[in-house]
Image (cartoon, rainbow, N blue to C red; front, side):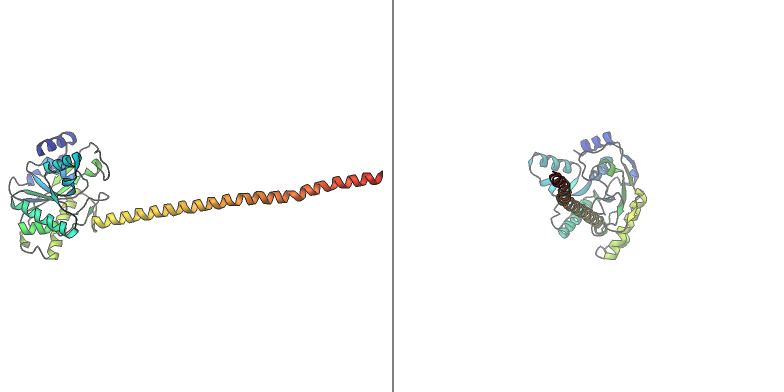
Length: 282
């Protein structure tokens, strides 16, 4: 399945790659990548000769029906590993455990330190729990990876991808053996994660933002909600103003009719006066 999927992706999109020589021919290694698109987990495995396993939410593997079975088969074929993400802490522990198991088998493990896709193409702060703990628990080298232009191929919310060439840069392996046995020290975890993110930034050329991508997404969602509420209020005020304007129109007409009445009475009086004058003359 990996051969057919990978071959098709390479044939259609023709991704360019730099640094393939940094991927070990055998033995465990961690591929720590930026995350721009849903398709990142497909393009990276497609250009490697070795199998690389990424974590994917369990829903991709358990959806019922024909579509669900096809999706599950596809994700398994490209090396995705299901993890139950129903609880934030439980999901993190499950991902760490799965990653350690993959590396202990001498395989390649792929991970996105940002924890989620970038909402705007910038590089966000790495989460220290997963990457650093797996690296320190196993002693596996960490290869920083930069995905280039994958967000242009399949932006969030788009189902059909745009055919264009993405790029992949794989950096030299980082050795964190000096921190062996310190995987529960939060300062060490932060230092390891920041070092990896710095290397990814150099490879990708992305602007770095020192907040978590999840926080940025929350801010964007709140701003969009506030904008929507403001537009709704503006529409409501406009409707009220229009209603008030409509209500004023009959009053103006009524006032005009009242104003005209004395003029008509005034016009009648001279006619009455003329008849009186003629009667007098007779």
